Image (cartoon, rainbow, N blue to C red; front, side, top):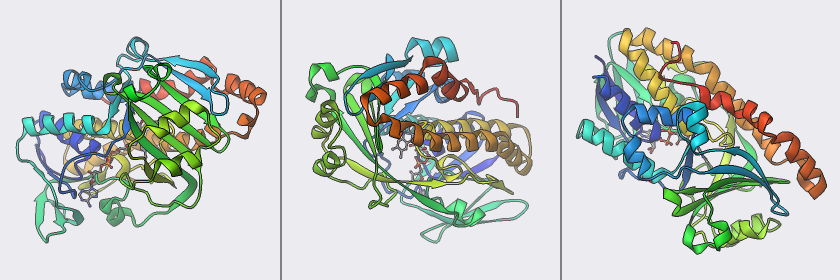
Length: 394
Ligand SMILES: Cc1cc2nc3c(=O)[nH]c(=O)nc-3n(C[C@H](O)[C@H](O)[C@H](O)COP(=O)(O)OP(=O)(O)OC[C@H]3O[C@@H](n4cnc5c(N)ncnc54)[C@H](O)[C@@H]3O)c2cc1C
């Protein structure tokens, strides 16, 4: 059994910890934040992610906090016209063998944290950033910002989009500002008028932007993401607050339902969207990357967290069988192609959601009917949900 060090106790690091603990490995997590909590925002989890959580024994705990939306629709930003794209809920279970869940990041993080702490109390250290590592053929040592050194058999860099571990392995890399930023916020559902209190996910599309809304926490909260083409905000962070007024200004031409949601957000957060080319490697010796550290992505296929869950399941399976170095090579081979395809597919969706054809109601109707027909949507999304990280050949 391996002695595993994990830098970062976010969604990916915690899931990897749980998967590894359940397989009998020793795990220690090192998190830079002094307090373990997540800012308000939602995450959508497709069947490819939820089947992993269920396999880890988290179904019951997750069901207490998720919202299983009944359907998904496309809406036109200017007029509000709606098209049904696909059913979720029971249909996801029937078609892909696992549910589609929408969850508050904080609730999701808490479920993972409780499970890790119950499985192995005291293995998470907070307020200790990983700054780098050194490795030999026999071990790897993680350097912490307070000067401490901790040694184990494997180091997993689960330290997010600005990963220090990635930096040391593969250099700075090139992040390009996309010219797009995302507003994110939450609204208590009861603040909204009755016609907006529905358990459906909506993708509002328009020229130069799109808006995604979906219910969380059994329908008590509505999650809002407003993506706009604007190039004066370049901070890539979960926690930068903006104002409702500024958010309303950015989406001034959008349908009244969108503006009603914005007026009811307590604090909207601003996130600049940066694009990065996929890496050629995720592992070197006894060190590997996972989640956003390995394959940061634009959020337009809603797959960043799902990929982190898949990575966690595959790393755990790989470490079962072999010595560390070949196990991590196997992990890398299993994950490179799929994750690169998701990163590229997410970028492609920018053009789809912000297409100039959406400028007039007639052009928009023809465009939506062509681009979001059920068969076309199925082709774009089914391969994401069908993937089973628990059984995929390694
Ligand atoms: C607008 C938007 C919407 C999104 N919607 C979805 C969605 O619907 N579905 C989906 O699947 N994904 C979505 N995502 C992506 C998803 O949130 C991320 O892909 C996911 O959080 C990645 O998990 P992670 O564990 O790799 O990174 P994180 O969750 O970022 O965790 C990294 C952790 O590492 C810690 N850390 C950082 N540096 C260090 C260090 N040096 N030492 C120790 N610890 C460190 C951080 O504090 C953090 O706790 C969205 C993202 C955005 C921006």
